[in-house]
Image 1 (tube, rainbow, N blue to C red):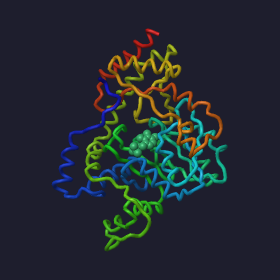
Image 2: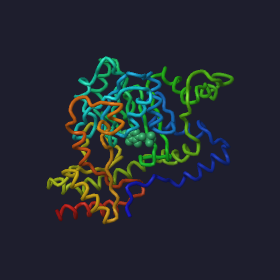
Image 3: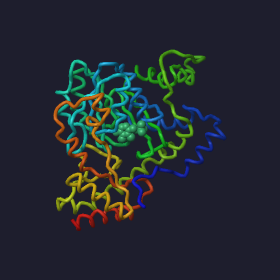
Image 4: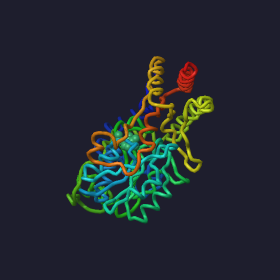
Length: 378
Ligand SMILES: *Cc1c(COP(=O)(O)O)cnc(C)c1O
């Protein structure tokens, strides 16, 4: 069986976890491995501060708290995203205002944002789908003119950039995910990226149960105490050690993933030429990270048949994101601004093919052969 996903694993992981338990003798957060990860992520994302968190969902929750989102505020985001993007703000009592996507990149349609803004709007939350950047020039310009926060859901965006600038580094905040389905993983985990200095100290306190423990570790205060509202958003060192074993060889993991993505693209180009399927579109000023390889079938029926056919060949292919605006919680906590011209239609056609670290090039070829066989029979 070719699974849809298998979590990335590097052999050094066990050595580092053993180091945490038997040498460092410190398994809680913010030890040696969290610091190594934070430093690597800060250099890679080119932002003032990066802190590992227990998930991207939690990083998003932190941004909602740090930007003071409250009951009655409105937050603009695409409907085509994972529910965590919305949850973080709904938990603070905000109303979600969904906008349509562009059919080419599946990203939020930047030309639909301005008409969704009301006097209650507080933030725009672009989601960089499949590690392909949203139109950040336009989004940052709109946010500046209307004094809105920009919070990037860059869960899928690590090591990808828009016009040479890393995803997650444009807005007030960016959020990464290290869930097992992402390019680099620690099981469950994420990171918050912070652009401006005054938010850094606030985030440190919020993340560490409302204490100034981070300043204490830096020797800036001689004891730590409860200084403000907070929660616990820092992961265990064991998880950070598992992640570090991947980040220290991130380039080779990245290149390896890109080879498979490119092979998919090359082998399926024929079907694209014949008009059977569509392939991902990457604007030439975006550099992506091979997070996801998807194809688009002509409609939902064809997609269902293809999924069954692939399954009969021992290949597990999946689709995702029932548009949030039409989900039960989306109807309750949000509304669609403008027309749903592409969100439902395009999401019904999209199919993700297996792509993960230990997938082989032969397996990619096998999947492509199966897709081709399906289209030669119909
Ligand atoms: C994976 C993902 C999340 C959630 O990440 P977790 O680390 O599992 O909380 C949020 N948004 C998007 C777009 C994602 O792909």
